[in-house]
Image (cartoon, rainbow, N blue to C red; front, side, top):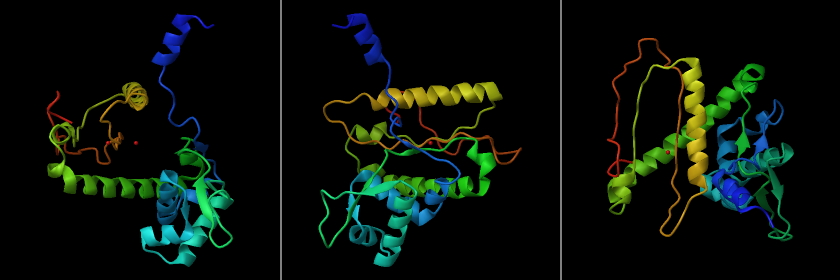
Amino acid sequence: MSDSRDSADHRSTPHDPFENAAHLDARSLRGLAHPLRMRVYQLIQKAPATGKSIAERLDISSASASYHLRQLETYGFIAEDPSLGTSRERWWRAAHKGFRLPEHLDTEAPELTTTLRHAIAARWSERLAAAVNLWSAQPEGWREAQLMADRTVDLTLDQMERFRAEVVELLNRYSDEGGPGERTVNVQFGAFPAPEPDDDRTPEADSPPGPSAETP
Protein backbone atom coordinates (compact mmCIF):
# COMPACT_ATOMS: atom_id res chain seq x y z
CA MET A 1 0.00 0.00 0.00
CA SER A 2 1.39 3.42 -0.91
CA ASP A 3 1.85 6.16 1.66
CA SER A 4 -1.18 8.50 1.78
CA ARG A 5 1.10 11.52 1.52
CA ASP A 6 2.50 10.17 -1.75
CA SER A 7 -1.02 9.75 -3.09
CA ALA A 8 -1.91 13.30 -2.14
CA ASP A 9 1.24 14.64 -3.77
CA HIS A 10 0.45 12.68 -6.92
CA ARG A 11 -3.08 14.08 -7.08
CA SER A 12 -1.82 17.62 -6.63
CA THR A 13 0.53 17.35 -9.60
CA PRO A 14 -1.32 18.30 -12.82
CA HIS A 15 -0.93 15.83 -15.62
CA ASP A 16 0.50 16.98 -18.92
CA PRO A 17 -2.39 17.03 -21.45
CA PHE A 18 0.20 16.73 -24.22
CA GLU A 19 2.01 13.72 -22.79
CA ASN A 20 0.79 11.61 -25.73
CA ALA A 21 1.37 14.31 -28.34
CA ALA A 22 3.40 13.91 -31.49
CA HIS A 23 6.79 15.64 -31.33
CA LEU A 24 7.39 17.44 -34.61
CA ASP A 25 10.74 17.40 -36.34
CA ALA A 26 11.93 18.98 -39.59
CA ARG A 27 10.45 16.09 -41.60
CA SER A 28 7.09 15.59 -39.91
CA LEU A 29 6.56 19.36 -39.82
CA ARG A 30 5.97 19.18 -43.58
CA GLY A 31 2.99 16.94 -42.95
CA LEU A 32 1.09 19.65 -41.06
CA ALA A 33 2.36 22.86 -42.65
CA HIS A 34 -0.66 23.22 -44.92
CA PRO A 35 -3.84 25.11 -43.91
CA LEU A 36 -6.33 22.59 -45.31
CA ARG A 37 -4.38 19.60 -43.99
CA MET A 38 -4.44 21.15 -40.53
CA ARG A 39 -8.24 21.35 -40.77
CA VAL A 40 -8.41 17.68 -41.74
CA TYR A 41 -6.12 16.78 -38.86
CA GLN A 42 -8.14 18.81 -36.35
CA LEU A 43 -11.36 17.05 -37.37
CA ILE A 44 -9.80 13.62 -36.89
CA GLN A 45 -8.42 14.75 -33.53
CA LYS A 46 -12.02 15.16 -32.40
CA ALA A 47 -13.23 11.76 -33.65
CA PRO A 48 -12.43 9.07 -36.24
CA ALA A 49 -13.67 9.97 -39.71
CA THR A 50 -13.83 8.79 -43.30
CA GLY A 51 -12.61 10.59 -46.38
CA LYS A 52 -16.22 11.13 -47.41
CA SER A 53 -17.20 12.73 -44.10
CA ILE A 54 -14.09 14.94 -44.16
CA ALA A 55 -14.94 16.10 -47.71
CA GLU A 56 -18.49 16.95 -46.67
CA ARG A 57 -17.49 18.78 -43.47
CA LEU A 58 -14.86 20.92 -45.21
CA ASP A 59 -16.74 21.26 -48.52
CA ILE A 60 -13.85 19.89 -50.56
CA SER A 61 -13.61 17.17 -53.19
CA SER A 62 -13.17 13.53 -52.21
CA ALA A 63 -9.90 13.51 -54.12
CA SER A 64 -8.56 16.43 -52.09
CA ALA A 65 -9.65 14.81 -48.82
CA SER A 66 -8.01 11.52 -49.80
CA TYR A 67 -4.76 13.27 -50.72
CA HIS A 68 -4.46 15.07 -47.41
CA LEU A 69 -5.39 11.92 -45.49
CA ARG A 70 -2.61 10.03 -47.27
CA GLN A 71 -0.15 12.77 -46.41
CA LEU A 72 -1.16 12.72 -42.75
CA GLU A 73 -0.74 8.94 -42.73
CA THR A 74 2.66 9.17 -44.42
CA TYR A 75 3.95 11.52 -41.74
CA GLY A 76 2.51 9.42 -38.91
CA PHE A 77 -0.29 11.72 -37.71
CA ILE A 78 -3.21 9.39 -38.43
CA ALA A 79 -3.73 5.65 -38.83
CA GLU A 80 -6.45 3.51 -40.36
CA ASP A 81 -8.90 2.02 -37.88
CA PRO A 82 -9.90 -1.43 -39.24
CA SER A 83 -12.40 -1.93 -36.39
CA LEU A 84 -14.58 0.83 -37.86
CA GLY A 85 -13.96 0.35 -41.54
CA THR A 86 -15.52 -1.86 -44.18
CA SER A 87 -14.35 -3.20 -47.52
CA ARG A 88 -15.79 -0.07 -49.15
CA GLU A 89 -14.97 2.62 -46.58
CA ARG A 90 -11.80 3.40 -44.62
CA TRP A 91 -11.91 5.09 -41.23
CA TRP A 92 -9.06 7.13 -39.85
CA ARG A 93 -8.13 7.97 -36.28
CA ALA A 94 -5.52 10.26 -34.75
CA ALA A 95 -2.27 8.52 -33.85
CA HIS A 96 -1.49 11.06 -31.12
CA LYS A 97 -3.26 13.59 -28.96
CA GLY A 98 -2.17 16.92 -30.38
CA PHE A 99 1.42 17.82 -31.18
CA ARG A 100 4.39 19.69 -29.78
CA LEU A 101 6.34 22.18 -31.87
CA PRO A 102 9.91 22.41 -30.50
CA GLU A 103 11.37 25.93 -30.54
CA HIS A 104 14.49 24.82 -32.40
CA LEU A 105 12.40 24.27 -35.53
CA ASP A 106 11.92 28.04 -35.76
CA THR A 107 15.58 28.27 -36.76
CA GLU A 108 15.81 24.95 -38.63
CA ALA A 109 12.65 25.35 -40.72
CA PRO A 110 11.32 28.90 -40.23
CA GLU A 111 9.12 28.95 -43.36
CA LEU A 112 7.35 25.73 -42.36
CA THR A 113 6.81 26.78 -38.74
CA THR A 114 5.44 30.12 -39.94
CA THR A 115 3.01 28.35 -42.29
CA LEU A 116 1.90 26.03 -39.49
CA ARG A 117 1.35 28.87 -37.04
CA HIS A 118 -0.64 30.79 -39.66
CA ALA A 119 -2.90 27.74 -40.05
CA ILE A 120 -3.36 27.52 -36.27
CA ALA A 121 -4.04 31.25 -35.98
CA ALA A 122 -6.64 31.07 -38.75
CA ARG A 123 -8.48 28.32 -36.91
CA TRP A 124 -8.34 30.31 -33.66
CA SER A 125 -9.86 33.27 -35.50
CA GLU A 126 -12.71 31.11 -36.79
CA ARG A 127 -13.44 29.76 -33.32
CA LEU A 128 -13.40 33.23 -31.76
CA ALA A 129 -15.72 34.58 -34.46
CA ALA A 130 -18.14 31.70 -33.83
CA ALA A 131 -18.00 32.37 -30.07
CA VAL A 132 -18.71 36.08 -30.60
CA ASN A 133 -21.80 35.20 -32.66
CA LEU A 134 -23.11 33.14 -29.73
CA TRP A 135 -21.81 35.41 -26.95
CA SER A 136 -25.07 37.09 -25.98
CA ALA A 137 -27.08 33.87 -26.37
CA GLN A 138 -25.12 31.88 -23.78
CA PRO A 139 -27.02 30.83 -20.63
CA GLU A 140 -26.91 33.13 -17.63
CA GLY A 141 -23.69 32.59 -15.70
CA TRP A 142 -21.82 31.20 -18.69
CA ARG A 143 -22.54 34.45 -20.52
CA GLU A 144 -20.94 36.53 -17.76
CA ALA A 145 -18.04 34.09 -17.26
CA GLN A 146 -16.77 34.49 -20.84
CA LEU A 147 -13.73 36.65 -21.46
CA MET A 148 -12.24 38.60 -24.34
CA ALA A 149 -9.21 40.60 -23.28
CA ASP A 150 -6.15 42.19 -24.84
CA ARG A 151 -3.35 43.53 -22.67
CA THR A 152 0.05 45.07 -23.46
CA VAL A 153 2.74 44.96 -20.78
CA ASP A 154 6.51 45.59 -20.57
CA LEU A 155 8.49 42.46 -19.62
CA THR A 156 12.09 41.34 -19.51
CA LEU A 157 13.02 38.03 -21.14
CA ASP A 158 13.18 36.38 -17.71
CA GLN A 159 9.72 37.68 -16.81
CA MET A 160 8.35 36.51 -20.15
CA GLU A 161 9.70 32.99 -19.56
CA ARG A 162 8.24 32.87 -16.03
CA PHE A 163 4.92 34.22 -17.26
CA ARG A 164 4.74 31.53 -19.95
CA ALA A 165 5.56 28.75 -17.44
CA GLU A 166 2.91 29.99 -15.01
CA VAL A 167 0.23 30.15 -17.69
CA VAL A 168 1.02 26.61 -18.89
CA GLU A 169 0.88 25.35 -15.29
CA LEU A 170 -2.49 27.06 -14.80
CA LEU A 171 -3.95 25.54 -17.97
CA ASN A 172 -2.66 22.09 -17.02
CA ARG A 173 -4.14 22.38 -13.54
CA TYR A 174 -7.58 23.33 -14.75
CA SER A 175 -7.55 20.54 -17.35
CA ASP A 176 -7.58 18.09 -14.41
CA GLU A 177 -10.63 19.63 -12.80
CA GLY A 178 -14.26 19.12 -13.69
CA GLY A 179 -17.65 18.37 -12.22
CA PRO A 180 -21.40 18.44 -12.74
CA GLY A 181 -22.47 20.89 -15.41
CA GLU A 182 -19.04 21.13 -17.01
CA ARG A 183 -18.73 22.28 -20.61
CA THR A 184 -15.84 22.21 -23.04
CA VAL A 185 -14.17 25.62 -22.91
CA ASN A 186 -11.85 26.79 -25.66
CA VAL A 187 -8.89 28.74 -24.27
CA GLN A 188 -6.79 30.75 -26.72
CA PHE A 189 -3.58 32.31 -25.50
CA GLY A 190 -0.82 34.21 -27.22
CA ALA A 191 2.10 36.21 -25.84
CA PHE A 192 4.76 37.71 -28.08
CA PRO A 193 6.87 40.85 -28.47
CA ALA A 194 4.88 43.67 -30.06
CA PRO A 195 5.45 43.61 -33.84
CA GLU A 196 5.99 47.39 -33.86
CA PRO A 197 8.26 49.19 -31.34
CA ASP A 198 5.69 51.96 -30.88
CA ASP A 199 2.75 49.55 -30.65
CA ASP A 200 -0.31 51.15 -29.08
CA ARG A 201 -0.47 50.18 -25.40
CA THR A 202 -4.19 50.91 -25.08
CA PRO A 203 -6.12 47.64 -24.50
CA GLU A 204 -8.59 46.97 -27.28
CA ALA A 205 -10.84 45.00 -24.95
CA ASP A 206 -10.73 44.00 -21.32
CA SER A 207 -13.01 42.70 -18.64
CA PRO A 208 -12.83 43.37 -14.89
CA PRO A 209 -11.57 40.52 -12.71
CA GLY A 210 -13.90 38.56 -10.52
CA PRO A 211 -16.96 36.33 -11.03
CA SER A 212 -18.60 38.71 -13.48
CA ALA A 213 -15.64 38.55 -15.88
CA GLU A 214 -14.58 35.78 -18.04
CA THR A 215 -9.39 30.83 -24.74
CA PRO A 216 -1.59 28.99 -27.35
